[in-house]
Image 1: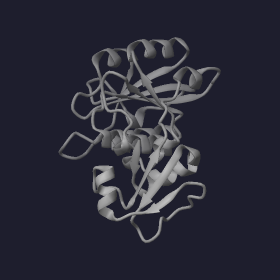
Image 2 (image 1 turned 30 degrees about the horizontal axis):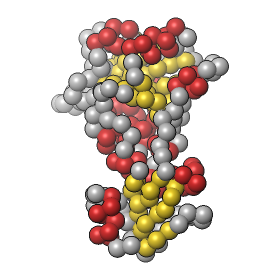
Image 3 (image 1 turned 90 degrees about the vertical axis):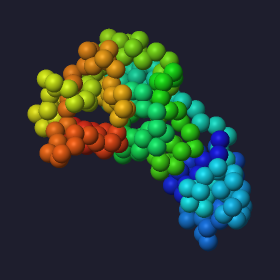
Length: 227
């Protein structure tokens, strides 16, 4: 996979430099330590063609692989865990920005659906500022079944959505050690089946529009509840 962006490449090198096959850059300086990785100076047009975008910030890299995490291994034997599930989030930039927030908030793993929604891609690496290198991302084939398994193993389920009779975020206090927080796409929101099984929490707003983008909602909720 070709990834691009200064922070995306930097964090991949930091996490596992053996997974980085080479780095191409057009900047005056690379800007971070990359010993042990082949590094080549190329012009900007070469990088743009290889990355298929001009948003590469003068640095691209080829990584050998990206592996999704095994949710069972993450959950097994743990008494305290905070997980996030992004329901049908189709925009890779929204996914990447949410991953960045989750990693900074100390979330243990992020779940995304195998059938619906964006998957990890070069754009996700860039938008997450390399956070996707550090946060375990689990690709779930049947989210309904997986949520039920988590509930049976002691997880509490919380959905962040603006609905009637939802608990206002300032009034909510987290009192459980194993939690799954669900956020939906800006267009479709969270599926009804998940909402029925969840404690629904809403983020109050004072402005004239009743909408926050995904990563802002994730940040507002997680940093209020977990810190």
